[in-house]
Image (cartoon, helix red, strand yellow):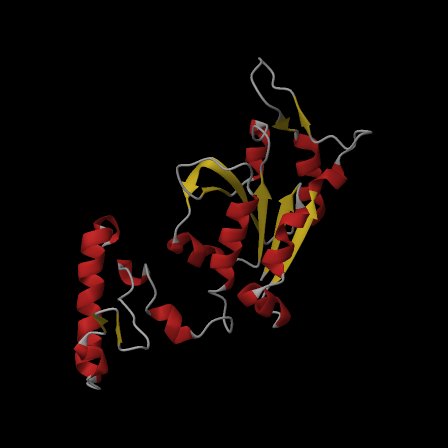
Length: 220
């Protein structure tokens, strides 16, 4: 899979691409991630990519030309385009599973006061992380890329993915490690019983109870 991220701040992605699972996935060639500074597509003498708003208003909007020209340069017949915007559809694990099947995904990061509305005509998807405002689309683009990458074959153990939070409309079960007792808090007896059938049943019961308590809205 290939992900191209259009941004005005490519240096923000240096740590993201060079640490942990993302770095290993790139090295394994499970994914190709390209960071593209669309300022390079500006035709103005000062490389300007934003301008004042017609009708007045605070801030500056991203101009059409640099983004359209960049998309013209990199888009293929198999490309899908997602714009990071607070008025988009909230990103979910279900959407991540859809995105992981794309051959080529282009993520466009907004900045300043937002996009000229005509830029949104490029998008197959408008995506938001939630009902809050960030200074730009770079952090959402990282989060989306991370969530997709870990789902790709060979990146993370398949068994780990199967029991994760949001699988089957449930949160994950509680997990424990050593020491067996810490500050008066003990690991549940069933988990050290060695009875795998009972452990499996307990974990399923805990997933149901935990989801009912914390996120009843996602239960299937």
